[in-house]
Length: 453
Image (cartoon, rainbow, N blue to C red; front, side, top):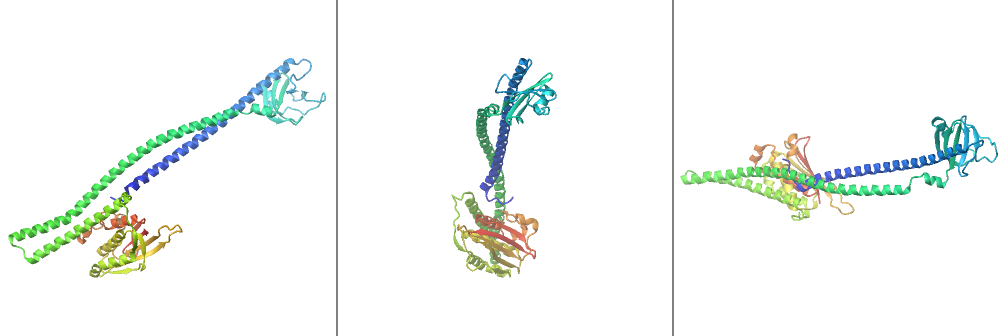
């Protein structure tokens, strides 16, 4: 199972993703609701204006009927504020109430919109059109009576414009209702969102707890298995010594050999315990940073690496290995000294164990990202490489997992705990960096990692 370092952050990542999706969904629904409300308001206002136009048209139709009923031998307009026009079916003007001269000539009105409607449907109207006779805008309403077409018109003045327009109070009420409904929707959405978030968080937490419990069971099984091997070996050697001593069948050389093997297994056991303690300390600092803060101080990393190389110099000599340390002489970081020590010590121990006899280790700092003017920490990029056999590509994604071994038999034979690279990865992450491993084209394994300090 992949190494788990940030359980709280993992849960937060899933929660943030779901919250973002829910927020986007709510915003989309609100936009659709506002678009629907605006469309309905515009539609209803248009319908109200059409209703006002229809009422005015009906009123003028009644006026046309009144004119026709009063017609005897001549035409006249019963109301001076209403313009009256009488046409024949050919569109010729027979009477115009606005004429200042009796028998004043007019253009043929056959192609006028309201006249055509009256001829075809019995009645018709035109909303607003400028009169060629008076130059004034009018609302026209025409009615066909046998061979005559009676047309009445009202000037499109401020009073008529206001009467035909939709009621502003209706608009205000519609806006008020829209915002009230929107507020109710947001309130209900928030309540449902809280409930959904609680359910999602509970589901995520339960899923995480199941996976984390499974991880802990596997980790416990791995630890028990790793502890069992050296403990069984020590117990076996000591039992052999005790039985041989009781029977008097062991000499000093055999006794010394069994004690050396027991001591070797005890060292392996101690290394395993120390690695587990280190990982637990890193996990505690990660999950509960306020309770288990990671202490940092100014550390000369170059000096720290030189000290590690001095500590393992005998191992390097026995393996006939050469180290090229290209770190700057005074490379100082604000970091946790024990964790940075664990990073380089485990990488060096790993190379000594697996790079092979006569191989070369190269340590360098490839780049330093300068701090900004706000004095944020700098980022230091390191490369740690060897020219050994490397690691097959299929194993590279998993070499940082706890207790994962490329060659299990060889790892145990060399005394590795299976936790070294897991410690390296977690310590790097604790310092705000990342780490990757790859096989070099010319052969060997190369680690690239960064530290922020």
